[in-house]
Image 1 (tube, rainbow, N blue to C red):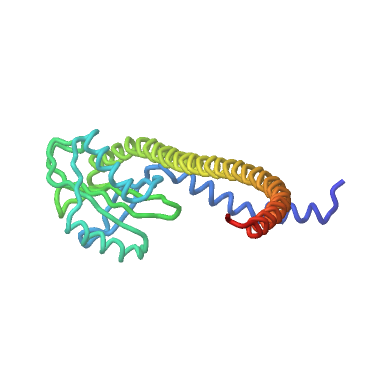
Image 2: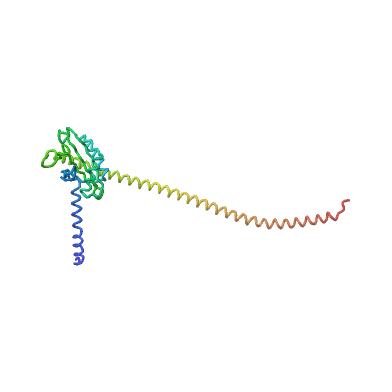
Length: 260
């Protein structure tokens, strides 16, 4: 049976983890969920359709532009005006993370309306490498889409984002796979280099040990030769002494013998 102290500690731990679990669950449900939002633009608060996706801002923006061009033939581009508006957006929302905006102007015959429309997409970097995408637009600078005044057009913005969200999730996961594959390839490359270094060091060590063994054997042979030569030097000295004595005797005999 568990002690009261253990039961108390377990209950306390569950109580501490419960808010964290709720926060993580809430954050998870908000990912890739298309919802209505608002942001400041052109001096007013504009209605937008927002979705939070995985990935850094630049990667998210590039995929959004490619997706809109492929699916709706809309070329979203950035510009100086957009950068100025993004600066206002940062100040109004008190954001310190990265922001960017792209737009396409006076597009006729789109999925949204047969009338020419202006569309904008704002990107805001959130925590943990996630980016929020906000899509909004209008028939001009004075008529922006809203859920109450231009219901049909605003709903079609939502439809576009509903189609974009799963594609963005697939792209983000695919990019994560690419990044993981690159990490594995880098590790494998490092392993290959280390294997080569180990093999080279082992080969050098074996060659050095072989050379050392050869030198030791040569030293033994040299020592044996020195010992043998030393004995021969003793004999040589004795032989020289005998030869020198014989030479002295013959010189003395020669000196004592008359020439004629």
